[in-house]
Amino acid sequence: MTTGICAILLAAGAGSRFAGPGHKLRADVGGASVFGRSLAAVLASAIGPVLVVTGAEDLTADVEAVARTAPAGVTVSTVRNARWTAGMATSLRAGIDAAVKLGADVVIVGLADQPGIEPDAWRRLAQCGAELAVATYDGVRGHPVRIAQRWWPSLPDTGDEGARRLLREEAEIVREVACRGTPMDVDTTDDLARLRGPDPAERQRVGNPPKE
Image (tube, rainbow, N blue to C red; front, side, top):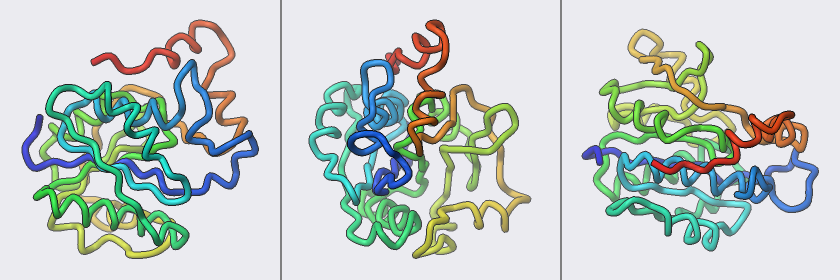
């Protein structure tokens, strides 16, 4: 486990674009929920304590269920963001405030609606050593994102933008870290169908939860 690093998984949104039954984070992908896979990946990476920021949905039971699979010594806590309707920035801020209380000096931030992100992506961001870093997939930026403590005051307090502007403004020092996995967001039922895959081989690949 890497000292001083805290993982933040943002899971506060209402998922209003998802037309399926229930919240999108509870949609099934190969026998596990979207949220369950996302959380299992960050836990399996074992980079440090994990903070799950919630808002629209009470995910306490979901967190507890997945936490049973965590490697020894890896802790996971739920942080309730009462201001989640004011945008993703408030959830990121809530996560960082909780990370401060844990004594972290680096946060690595991911999204709970990206179940194709692999543990190795979290691990590579933890090990890269940069103050600002972002995972890339086939050359395209995605999540997770690494943010060192000195940059936390520069993050927005409201709105639907997290670290994007900071990464743009500090482009000269941002390290891009090539990662494996599928960074697709599950925003709609069509996204879910694409993630599940059209063929048995792809469904089997996505259907295997992290076992690291």
